[in-house]
Image (cartoon, rainbow, N blue to C red; front, side):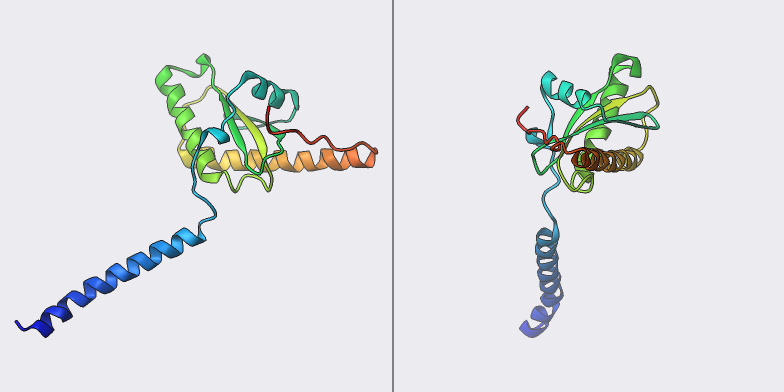
Length: 168
């Protein structure tokens, strides 16, 4: 085998490598942001949960109850409230893990602005993550539309719309 045929044999692999690198770079540039679930995306304190519950925006669909409240941030934050009556620790942790994953994958598609979201769960058997994701999206979108109605109602009444701070 001569040198020319060896180089010809290597070229398909080199072109595959170049194509892979280019497609990887294109996928990085087209992604809006990394889909992570960092501490800044979480509600961690009782006063944050109380503020969301106090906003009195509650939407129910299937086994999920979603409470929302606008925040001054450009991202949504998530809090989970899953009581012992849901089932054993294994079941509760499975549901929490699936809900966090559903939020992580759809956090940029939920609403055009930031919301604090608390998800409470009714007793049920764990569902596929896809169903949690679809339900979460539908509930937050419905809630967003309701918040817009509230703001229009307040602006017509001459009141300034309440804009919540994000540092609670």
